[in-house]
Amino acid sequence: FFFNDTATTEIYTLSLHDALPICQFTRRPCSCRGRIRGNHNNMTHKIFGVIGWKNSGKTTLMARLLEEFSRRGYVVSAIKHAHHKFDIDHPGRDSYKFRNAGARQVALISPKRWALMHEFRDEEEPDFEEILSHIGPCDLILVEGYKGGPFPKIEARSPRSLTQEPLSGDDRRIVAIASDGEANTGALPGFDVNDIGAIADFIAGHLGLVKK
Image 1 (cartoon, helix red, strand yellow):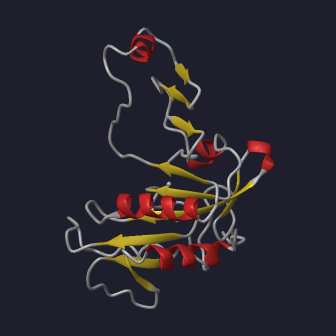
Image 2 (tube, one colour):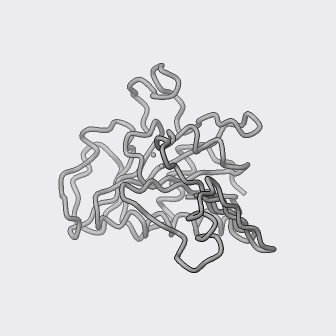
Image 3 (tube, helix red, strand yellow):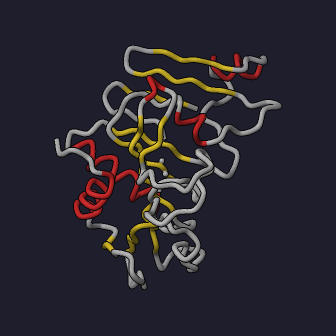
């Protein structure tokens, strides 16, 4: 599902580190520091991920970072990977009727935004690079999910999380920790999850974003 709002560019989020394993896209040791080339006009996207266990606050952190970077004048897009079935359409809607009747893709267009829904049916879920090819020009893509993605990430932690095991021990692309409680960050920089300005500064510096 792709969504484009003319007022706030959105599509839905991802994450990386310096010392790196084989990139699943290039098949070479990854040194992209969050820059991955997509197929849209052969551009290179700057990507940063937000990951965490359920109830870690990662979605709230994503939304606040999107707001902060937009406030700073950046054009930001987002990617979200869901592990469960989701639906953005509802019975009774015209688009639902089209989809239910067998349409593989349904496009909705209005003066404010457009959306494209794609039914997999017998297809496999596309990989991240294919999703990236649908993202238009932007300064930054934030990604939620895709824990194994080949880009830098910040791990969200919370005492309310259903799982307390750190993710950073298994992923060298996690470059920082954001928490709303006590957290052992080891050698990684740690941030209060509510200090959005500092987290945004870190991401901008890590990716080399040009100040607006």
